[in-house]
Each structure stands twice: as structure tokens, then as C-alpha cells.
Length: 426
Image 1 (cartoon, rainbow, N blue to C red):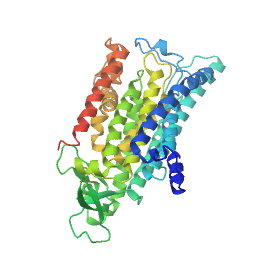
Image 2: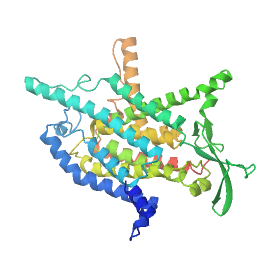
Image 3: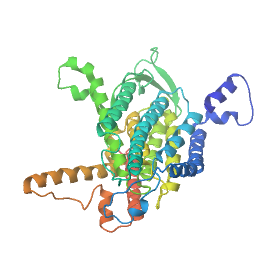
Image 4: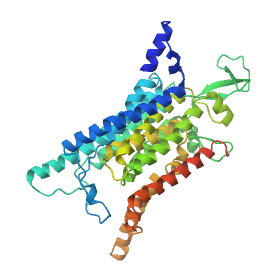
């Protein structure tokens, strides 16, 4: 909103010191980080006190883990703090007429509501148990039904996929070597040279570590009759749904130790912010030989707010946590990461830069599958890990919670650096 207000001042010829600052994207990025930090730090404590007063506390099952009972009663639903820290700076400093910003605002609100409903239903079950004077046991039936969560994730997947495929403002620029006098050709001076571009709208993604590093989803239908090529949009939307659902749930599973999900998400946000800024800047895109996506740079403001919100949230969520993000935060952060990965055409890098999320959800899948298989074959279920998700396995082995989280962060930093290398190593 401030960006548009300062643009209006410019159109009206109103000049005052500092008016031009809003024209610089880097300034707005820094302001988004700073404001997100201020919101989460200042209002985070107030929200924690409110949640504590409303008895929005975590109920802990006895899993035999060190320090788990100390977490009992810790306020949950703290993801509201993160969502506030994302939405307010974005609304103030981003260009709100950009399709990518509007799409991510919708994604944040949508998944935030789903997570909030889930957390609220768990709270209501706890209160009902207290009113009846019976012991409350945390279970799978006290929150939002699993199918409803999936339904919500599929819904946002359809929205994101449809907008990215059909919206006329979603396009990339291709360098053109033909006749520059054609009306559709765009001429730009890039790094001291005149270059020619044409707008293109294709369902493509980037293949890491490959020289000709683009892949068109329509090629997956090449084995079918040519008439099926018109249904590429169906395939693309299905891929988007799968990615958003998978990453969102993986983020939710990772949120089991103090600061683990928030710290990991902040590091991933830094990587995606660099990708968005580079692909949204014609000069950087030309230098790095990556696709230029007009208006994508505005997403760096959204991501800056996300990073600031996650870091500010860790002030209260680091060990020992004063608040948990709950599904309100974990589902939202996972969905944001997935959606932006698709927008910047880096979804094939998700298994790398979301490696912590990936091994966490993989450990659960392997544990459950192996347990069922061995129970059917031997009559007794056996386990691969002492406990899943993976972070609980290390807790069972005697590692302190803070040490596990710190080491996972270090691994995440390594994964981020590996993904940054893909910008030049092909």
C-alpha cells in the first residue's frame, strides 16, 4: 500500500525527502524484513500471553522422550504470529497489482485458515474433556479430519496451478535472434548490449546441473496422440497439487522440536528470495543465463517478510520454546515454500533444498510401511528407526533437542549452498 501511495505522490508531482526510496526494491526488501521482525517480537509476546490466558496449551503424549513433559501447557497456534509478520509487511511494501504477490497472499491466508481450524478443533476437544472431568488424550480424531486437510491443500493447489498456467500476466522472456522489427519483439539494453526478447507462456521447469536446463511438462504427454497435448494443463495442475500437498505435510511433520521448522523455513526462504530476485532482474538473469520472469522480483519482498517472521518467531520458539506454531504455522510455511518453488520454476530442486523436510516425511513413510510389512509377514511389527519422525530417533539415542535442531540447521545451510551453486554449475 505504501508503494502505491508513494507512486500516487509521484504522479501528483508531490516531492519530499525520501519519496523515491519506495522505487528501490532492495529498500523495500530490507523494510519488509525489519517490520516483520518488529511485529513478531513486539506482538508475539502479547499473543503468547493471550493464548496462555485462553488455555491454548499443547497436550503432550507420553512418548518417553527427554524433556517432553516440560512442554505440557506451552501455548500453540503461534503460527498466527508468523502469518501476521508475513501479511502486514507484504501489504505495505509490495506492489499489490502483481499476480505473484496476490497469489501468495491468497495461499498464505488459505492454508493459515486450514491450520487454524485444525488447531482450534484440538483446543475445543481439550476443553470439552476438561468440562466433562475426563482425561484428555491427544489423538488423530481431535482435530480437523485428514481428508479435509487434503481437500484444502488440493484446493490451493488447483488455484496456484490454474493461475500459473492460464493467467496472461504469468510469462517469461525468451531471447530472440530473428527479425527485431517484428511488433512482438521487445528490445532492451542489457549489460551494455542491445538484446531482443519475445514473451513466452510455457509450462516449464528448470533441471538442475544440466546445460540445456529447461523441461517442458508437455513432453510428458509426447507418447500420447498429438490431440492430448491440449491437456497439458491437467498434468501441470496435478503436479502442482502433489508438490504443495507433499511439502506442506512434510513441514507439518518437521515441526516437532523447538525452532526446527521455523529455522529451516527461514533458510529456505533466503534461497527462494535469491532465486526470485535474480530471475526477476533482467541483468542478473542475463548474467546467470537463467530465465527472466517479469515482476517476479516483487516476491522477494514477500519472502523477506517470511524470513523476518520466522526469525522473529524463533525468539520465542527456540529451546525452551515459549510457544509452538501448530498447524497454523507449519502447514502455511510448507505451502508457501512449495508454491514459490513452482513460481520460480525450481520445483525439481525441492528434494535438495527441502532435504530436511524430505527425510523427515520419508522416515515416517518408511517406518509405517516397514512396520505393516513385518507385522503381516512375521506377526510382529518391526521398526527401522527407534522412533519417527527422524528427529525423535535422535532424541531416543540420547541427543539433546537443541543439538539436534542446530545440526539440522547446519545441514540445511549446506543444502541451500548446493542449490545456489546450480545457478552457475551446469
